[in-house]
Image 1 (cartoon, rainbow, N blue to C red):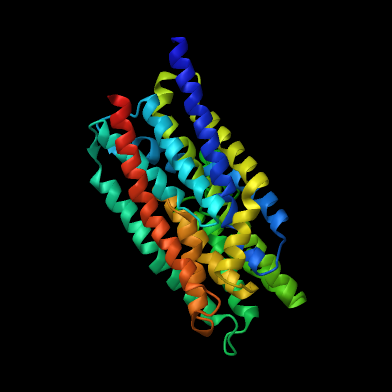
Image 2 (spheres, rainbow, N blue to C red; image 1 turned 120 degrees about the horizontal axis):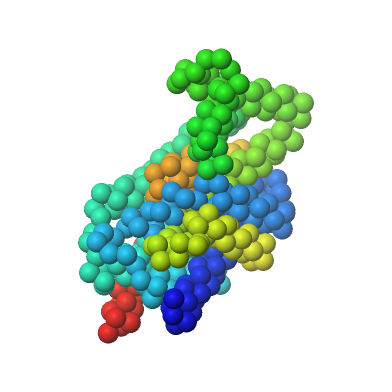
Length: 390
């Protein structure tokens, strides 16, 4: 391999690492624990520390699906060259850095997807309409479904005819059952999930055994949360919020790492000595570093400027955030955690005093930033690739 080619690959890797750092400092590092910080369940600095560790774990164990989709599934008929990869990553990271500096969360999924498609079209690539429909459906339905679930949960917390010693454990049991069925790369030889791995210790096999293990896991989680709330209601609610924040932070790393390292995946065909796992590991390290060094600013922005959240609204916000994030990871769809969290915050706020505490002006700027970032990233990607090609 020529020295110039190696230098280009090195530049692409550095751009990917910078992108991962920006993601950790912004959407992935800020949004998962922002509701918990808003509920005073954890300090800003501690949230930044834990979200970095959990984001790293999610990137390494679940980051493959979204990375493959971003790298190879958005444009057909071509493979991004090194120069195209560098353009994509610099555009995405640059727009994200602007969002961090201004305090307005720019949606990473929109910027990276827009720049990848723009660069790909400039190179003569074909649209992948089926994937665009899938991505568009997730993006459009996220506010509706996430906000709707958050509204429903917030309506029941608290409620005289549904005591929290019942409602919270039920939510915990549902979340626990879903966790048992998440796919992890390190469990691939045991069926890929905790539930499938659990069937190895029981004599019955098949779907029934997996369902039984999943249900059992959910019941254990529900019972543990019920015991904790009975013993100390305020403390139990706070610990449940932190647990949900941890799950969302883990899911953020699994989803967002693909936006940083996915563009590198086409280049691995020319670098057989570099494995996808090594690329995911590097992306996880970048997210970890970004979360630890620069996430507190965005955590404060989301937790304090959008709404004043208590533990119940935080629960209503984090449950749908976790569900949507893991759905996107399973489908291999790049998704914005800013969109997920903000939509859930608005939904939970609508159930409490008609949305008091949510700033319409701030939300308006945020939505405009989401739409504008996708259009701008597409234009910059298309135009920059034409100039480079020329």
